[in-house]
Image (cartoon, one colour):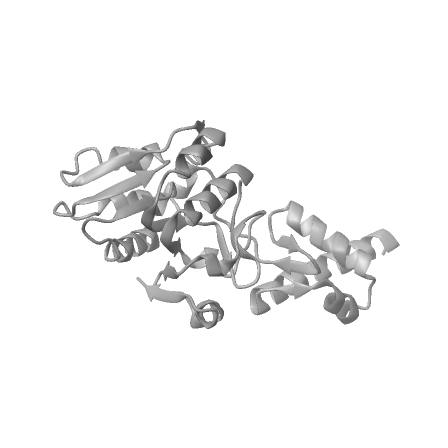
Amino acid sequence: MSITFVHFMLTKHRKQSILAALKRDGQVIAKALSASFEVSEDTIRRDLRELASEGLLQRVHGGALPSSPAVGDFVQRQQINTVAKLAIARKAVELMLPGQVAILDGGTTCVLLARHLPPTLEATIVTHSPSVAVELVNHPGIEVVMIGGRLFKHSMVAVGAAAIEAITHIRADVYFMGVTGIHPTAGLSTGDLEEAYIKRALAARAAEVVVLASTEKVNAASAYVIAEVTAANTVVVERKTPRALTDPLAALGLTILHA
């Protein structure tokens, strides 16, 4: 048996153990892994770097967090976890009040939210999502305000300087935000830098921020930070989401609603 093969097997076993620890504990610390495996922190950092390149985790300072799987394009995300998204959307509908100005994000769950708004509701919906706007074309009581800009085709939303400028002129009652990750210390995150800027700007213009998050997004992180987790007031999750994932968020003062 060659030295190269032995090294390969040790590395493979170590990586599998790292992923198992990440799944079990929700995070891993490079220094602790180094001590546990009796290897250098440089070796652990290389393992984490390689695992991150495969999309299996999200590196953060000092270690790693679970990587959100919700980073595909809009069409791909429409096919993922549709039952949970529908339940979350219907629960979020209950938070909409007559006469409100509400911002709807561009995620697939927000499209479902728009689709299920009751026909008797009279309100104003502000959105940078053509998909959301189209859902509301035939709604008798909803006024739609579109935020324009460069169309980011991956997520079917407007982004860029023009969108940011338009957002500064809005004052909304509530913002329904989609994320790819929500974590008590890593905060609210998404997979694209420009989307992160847009979401941060929208959050700043709303009196209340409601995050819509299916289970795979809770205690996960993506590359671009939107804001600290406490920028949100409420998180709507699916019913099966374990309390072990939501309790740390509740401890920070967030209201957790189960759909």
